[in-house]
Image 1: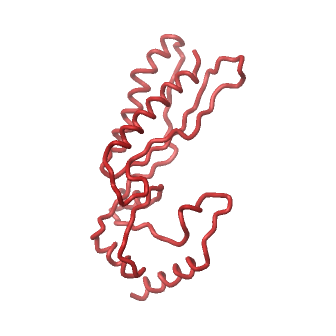
Image 2: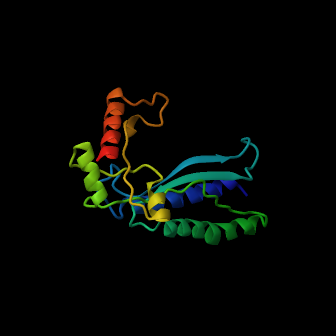
Image 3: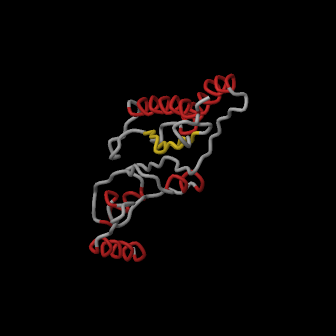
Length: 185
């Protein structure tokens, strides 16, 4: 039984869910306007002439608040355990599929008219807003503690998490000024 071949079946299933999510709920305030599911890593096998007995697939799911994160995960897990695993075990009784959650960032959203958003706009001297499509702890603060949260800070996500990541001095100065206003207002 070739573990990579079964993993490829799971990857195609994940791609299908990703396509459904792209056609699902939309929020134009995000730079990526829909929920996403992406396979980022596949690791398996040891040599071309050895049938691979293990394969690991790592995927990431980022959802809008109105998409049921647990429901999507249960669907993936259900497909693997109810449809793939019995076929695998028919060929090799010791076959197994295991899921491990590496980290979780629940969806985060705060209404544009929320008083916290209004105050933030006043402090930074802007009237526009947007939402971030990257993972932050903001969703955890809201879910676990009930704290409305805003994600803000110096720098640009376009240069974040890259070998030459940087924050311009003007951004740091603006952050200092914002912090001063925050504690004195």
